Amino acid sequence: MKKFTCVADIGPLDLAVAEAMRIKADRFAWSDLGRNKTLLMLFFNSSLRTRLSTQKAAMNLGMNVMVLDVTQGAWKLETERGVVMDGDKAEHLLEAIPVMASYCDMIGVRAFAGLTNREEDYKEVVIGQFLKYAGCPVFSMEAATRHPLQSYADLITIEEFKTKPRPKVVLTWAPHPRALPQAVPNSFAEWMNATDYDFVITHPEGYELAPEFVGDARVEYDQRKAFEGADFIYAKNWSAYSGDNYGKVLSMDRDWMVDSAKMALTDNARFMHCLPVRRNMIVTDEVIESERSIVIPEAANREISAQAVIKRLLESI
Ligand code: CP
Image (cartoon, rainbow, N blue to C red; front, side, top):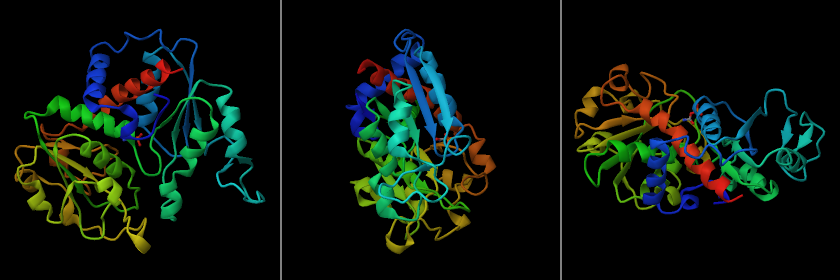
């Protein structure tokens, strides 16, 4: 594996899950694999879980790790080619990428969608330039349209907690005060569609995701109906994808918050969220603190998904 930006990069999911379980059983078994190799983690946006879990994963493999917050202490980077650089951006990504790559063996990049220009966001300009110009393995730590390390951890978590071979998994939109990218729900849908689970997406009208991510998933506009018989409820907010509403908050309808009454409609479902989560907007205190909530093991599995990905990338160097 030379890069990791989407589900297709990881290959068959049964093998990816089996590899994750081997790592989880003994995460230090490959502590020589990354010896004298350096990972550069580059953040254009904030992070708690991705930053810590990916760094820990690389350390488990014996790597050295450098972390750069592009917005704090580095030169402001221009990402568009052809721009007259007479503004506040002192360096172009086209020089910065090969320079950074000369100091490391692998690069992880976090660069969210700007949410002002759908075409630009969905072209994945920033991570695309890293893939083109870095000359070393590159992986996504959440890009404009996908968050594959999260989705891989979500899959591992569902496999660990499922009690039937083909669980019903429901991705539900939930309210949030600010506009958030579609990367997590897009990616979750992409990974769930690659399994044989019964996968349902529920959201208010106007919040339809891009068709290439919805794929063959069932879309149900009645959230309560979608919850019936569910084994996993995966809550997430996202901003609108469609047309002129791209990147906008169309609704903050608190009736879409996940609460105990809705969880009671499920088949004793597990509650999931990628975190960070806004309590009593997305989910009630009661649900997230309940014994059915698996948000902490889900977050812990971020170390495992990151280690599986970095291990595969190291094996290709
Ligand atoms: N879920 C996730 O990616 O968390 P962070 O934004 O804190 O990294």
